[in-house]
Image 1 (cartoon, one colour):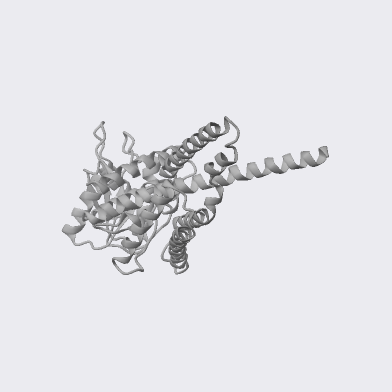
Image 2: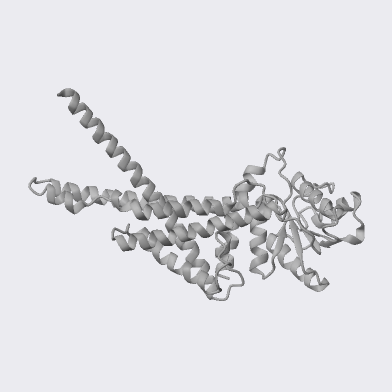
Length: 374
């Protein structure tokens, strides 16, 4: 008899543990939904106000659909995700409709991933990270679809508990208190996941897109500046960028190199030092142009677009460190220009790589919000 009671208690403990894990997975799904709803909604808002680029293309490409169908689907998705964050749907039709919509977006993300692998097979891109960003998006939507279908089973029905315990004096207030704690813990979990997504989303862009090489013939390659030592020697990060640009010139992919950088506090011109380095490596002086006013990423983008228009350059390539590439691409697109990103290779001797990569996350968000509310 004691053995049966012990087994019963063990089974109950296991069921409670499984229920807690299931509820945690559901909260994570609702946090991801909150992030995607906010990001997608703000991007649509900017597009309606006349933005030159659909920022939603950063996480999913719906260009295969008719012009208005993609934004319309994204709007419906925002409504569905917001409703999911507020309350887990229990009605059969609501659950299946929302899950089907997420499954559809999962399919779009899978198609995006397939397109990336196809481009790699044809030599149009070289993946630095083996899994494209759209692959992670597909997994997120699969998670959301399953949570929408099954999540209602994890939600406690407090009213049923109250009715069962109505004959016992303190049970109703106890259930109410437990319900309040459950709502607070759910809200805290959603907010925590929302913040985590705010870190992981740009980090995924940096690692996946930033390390992908879209190398092909262009009219000119823009080299983004970095620290130059007082004697004019390029820092390790800048040397990697310059060597990449010189290789592009030597391969005949870029007949012109545009060196862009600022002037540091000691009066050293990054752009001039970059030109001197390229010339010392055999690049003809007339093939190198200089922008000495590229003291920020945004300034470099603005200045080089103007230079390209003045000289009739139609296709621009850009090279910089991998962690910089996603922000660079975004800024060019916001200014109505598409560019081919060609990242400098990773240098295992650069001990600052982790710090500079993490530092890029707030920078990415800064420019993203600036493009949304510009």
